Image (cartoon, rainbow, N blue to C red; front, side, top):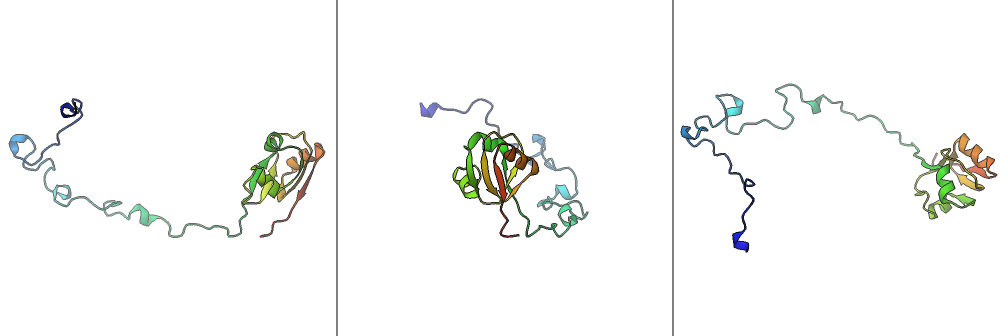
Length: 150
């Protein structure tokens, strides 16, 4: 019955009542020790206080480095992904995006991880030498399209 439910033995613990007389064992200074900053009411120091030393956050440099405004982040496409997920044929970035091989948000660079046996005609923004050689060895071709924003 609901009115007979009780918490498990030992799961509820009464809080320690400090400052209730010396007979309790926690009287007089109530466990705070004698004098000093830690014994006062409203004690404690602000977050990050280091005893008067210049705090860590104020010792850090003010400026956070430099970010290249025209940095190009390429999307990576490897040969093993082409071999496994794409049938032979001619593809550009939009066709690979429709196949969900790439997201199509960034320029695409073909890299040489894996091997290729199918014939691919690819038009991408970049390719490594090893990837280009592997595609040409399989009878395909890689055309490098120029980036518009560079």
